[in-house]
Image (tube, rainbow, N blue to C red; front, side, top):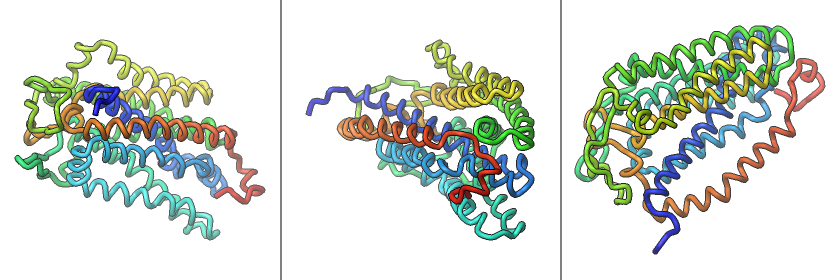
Length: 382
């Protein structure tokens, strides 16, 4: 069966779509995680905390669609990656899911009783359910850049040789803290748009400024580590972009500093790290100038730039192996079949615009600042 798009093009398109879905998750559910992590520190009274919670209360469930879409895309388009990562990082995934379970429970149960201890408990549960995923997602990305400790046998069975504590290395912690700082800045920028003016925004401005500075420092530190820290992988032999998926057909070698090769080969890719730095600076400027659009626009650009930097640096790798580079998974050797990718692309072309349309409609309907006064008159608020 002849298809309109060749196998290599479809693989490249799905690599790009995976990046789009991950960025969509970071931009939407990312500010939810940021707001949840900021909650105990920017809001002191019960009214202030309810107001902060309700800045994301109407949209947080819908934002998680991007998380589900990302996981589904990995499962369907990159089955090798799904199998290796979700089995090897099982305990880390379990930790994230356990934390994420706290979020809906905290939203729903917090205001069911007037007891200050009861509400404080769920406030910290919401903090935990926001901070832990933000940290672990970043740690996971750091481990992907370092290479995951797995190998494939001749039957393509995966064997993972790491453990949960082994994921927390100096570089992966830099990546994890960068993820937290990036999302704190994004959450602070969201509050600058949605929260009423007053003490909460003053505290948010201070913490958001610290988060923005840390994001700049940690992003630079991560770049220096990638350049001089002895990490990186490179395809050593010929690449068959049209061949059937089999990771063992690719010759890969560990090559310190190789994650920066793409920037000399394709100079246009420098747009990504530039956006990461410039966006954070713009976000900081928005905080200091008390310009909500500037703060949120800057934090969004920084998030796009930081995530894109990871993907573009690693291309065409998706999940390299630190213990057996030959088992590394790339865009060209770990995808689903030609026909599967094409059918999925048709489905995505139909349904992704619908997701974007209804998301845009929901945000337009629910736009506007949340106030403490509204808590007394609107029964639908948490």
